[in-house]
Amino acid sequence: MRPRARRMVPALIALGVLLPGATPVWAADPEIDRLLQSPVGKDWVTNGGNMTNERYSTLKQIDTTNVKQLKGAWMTRLKGSGLGGKYSLEATPLVKDGIMYMVTGNDDVFALDAKTGQILWEHWSQIGQTISTVCCGWINRGLAMGEGMLFLGQLDANMVALDIKTGKEVWRTPSRTGIMVMGSPTRRSISTGSSILASPVANSAYVAA
Image 1 (cartoon, rainbow, N blue to C red):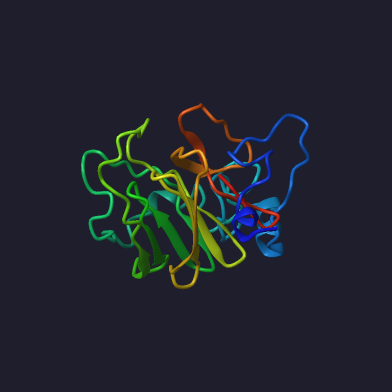
Image 2: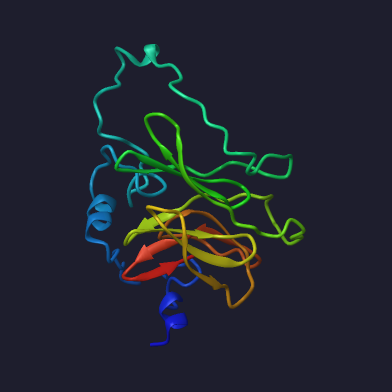
């Protein structure tokens, strides 16, 4: 199979659509696969926490007896990324091994130390600021992770993979249809014709958007 084809998605999930009756395909990364199918603990590796999308953590440190004692621990400014009236910050951060991964409305990605807020690396999308086909504002609703990479769909219709340790770009594949990509990682996403409301999903060595 050609390299370009290997990075495209099988027809059933190529645009984030899972057809009724299709057999689910799990991630090729065994650890991420396990986390996606398990109750959520200290790691939050996909939008909604795991594939049930319940947004529930089994951690016990915070409960009804001490929740009122919560207060801010740190604040980090993302160097002006996505700052402006046309941008929205709607992505759920992913957390793995104490590192938080965040994408902004400008499709820029940041890795932060979850305890201190220190920026560990940053990746700037360099997307053109004159895109006029944005249906719902300048947003990116989330990242996906697997096999040592982070995946994101960009408003300029590119699917991008980043090295999770350094933020360096591993590969970039343009959408064959030129349709912009946004949204949070999910296996059951819906195409609305002009835009894809689903970000990447790492499945069986392929990435779906």
